[in-house]
Amino acid sequence: MGCHSRGSHPLRQSIKSGQKHMNRITLPVETEIDYRLRWETANIPQALYGVELGEWVPYNTRTDVAWNAVHDLVGELPERRKTPENPTRRQRSLVGVGVSLCGPPGTGKTQLAVSALTTAHRIHGASIHFLRAADYVSHAHKLLDLESDRDKREANPELYQSLLNERIRVGRVSLLVVDDLGQEYTGPRGYSQNLLTQLFRRRFHRARPTIITSNHPQTDWHRYELSLPSFAKQAFPEYIVAGIDFRAEARAA
Ligand SMILES: Nc1ncnc2c1ncn2[C@@H]1O[C@H](COP(=O)(O)OP(=O)(O)OP(=O)(O)O)[C@@H](O)[C@H]1O
Ligand SMILES: [Mg+2]
Image (cartoon, rainbow, N blue to C red; front, side):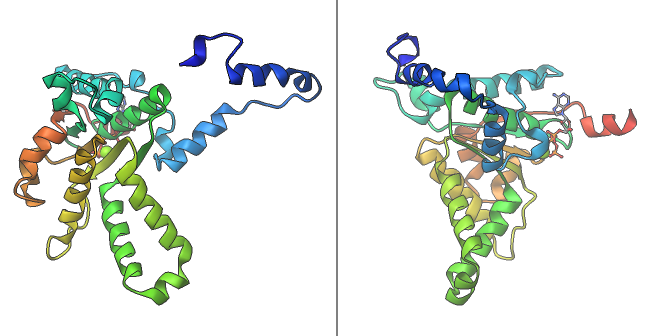
């Protein structure tokens, strides 16, 4: 990019021409606030604002393997978002591919997943979003309810708009975290299961990697759809995050 063409870069020039005014009025540069707004827009849990991949320390061999897989995903995000010209077999096989982080409670899956979002945004400027599986399902039900009832829709225009925006955003962002798969309400006839698998397939098809966290191993995911374990193996290979329950450790300390 033009960052190295000193002097001619339009941003550099606009900074230069603004220097006269800077002598008179000193404006605080609140970069922190910008980022907070970004994390909020991406629906990242407040406690995890700004956590980076480099801060997440693997604590055994399995978590080392998981961390490396997440690190590769973040580093290769541009190639995974778009098939490169004359791709090698490996490059082709990685398009749209994310990871799933499976393991018991308190082992750091959510923090690792959010770190991937933060670092991908900082390094590549990638569009990111965090979504709890349970929220996706309950929001989808609300949206369906509003879509089928014009009076309700007109009485709640802001809710309708925000649900629609979320629906569009989760399909489009370059990197999405679906947190806590398996904790959502499944409904009497399996309708909710399909909602999530449709989202996963749509994103993979459009070369948009997804990171999933779950307490359930992929072999159990057949309850969503018989073919999901097989699809998941391809679209978000499973890595185990297990060994320490940080919440139990914090309580004991
Ligand atoms: N590598 C790590 N080192 C130290 N503390 C960590 C690490 N990863 C996460 N933590 C802390 O441990 C706690 C639990 O982490 P997190 O919520 O990511 O676990 P989880 O595996 O997603 O749990 P659950 O399955 O219940 O959702 C949090 O307070 C988090 O900040
Ligand atoms: Mg979690």
